[in-house]
Length: 308
Image (cartoon, rainbow, N blue to C red):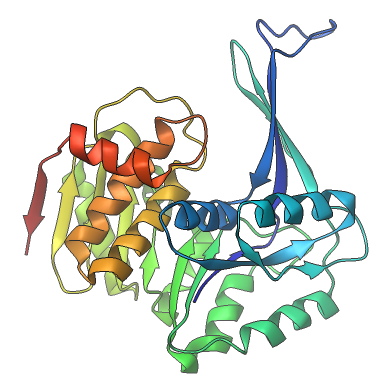
């Protein structure tokens, strides 16, 4: 089973307001409410691609109830832990001449809540995949990802980490199956600016030397690079299309990679699925469907370069 862990999920409330003006009454022309959070995005895209997963994390209040309802309506299994204080956050995304986001805080997560999570994670086994994605709330230890990987180290399950800076660097010693920084995040780790694929390959291999098995680096419209565990390197330009919404594209790439890997047990096919799934989400108002991914593959072949 695939498990996705989102520490601070959200209800994403997307408002379209033509020519938004501060200090004035503005009226929406469209409103959308859907589940948010990087791990939750991975679960939703996996479901769209025909793979089951279980969403883990913390929920609180009536907003938490609504988030769970929205996920279950989509056929996604959930095993959220309830938190007494606070409520699941609402993130407001305003689409206008400029995009503006207002993100809520989320509930208060205490030590007893963390222990409940550990108890659940202790039940995972080597056949499972755990995806840990997104930031850690300020009320939790900043070492949570590292602490979880250390605790689960002897289980030898495959763990995917999609996070930034120290959250990502600190887990490398525990050999995550896959990490997925983008090129800007990769540059932040090594205190440099990375624009060219050759530089991406060089620094991705540096992360492998630090412990990561597979390093998948997204580069938005410039495509992606995979430094695979078997020593091969794959790189490609992005498929052509009009970017409508980049939110969730990186999460979709993770889901596509996992779907491709589980289906074919092949890094090249996994990389292709990740690339096309991430792009399909970027070219859509919502997260990619299986039809959108395969239509993009059929209509927009990209040349894949392989280095050993």
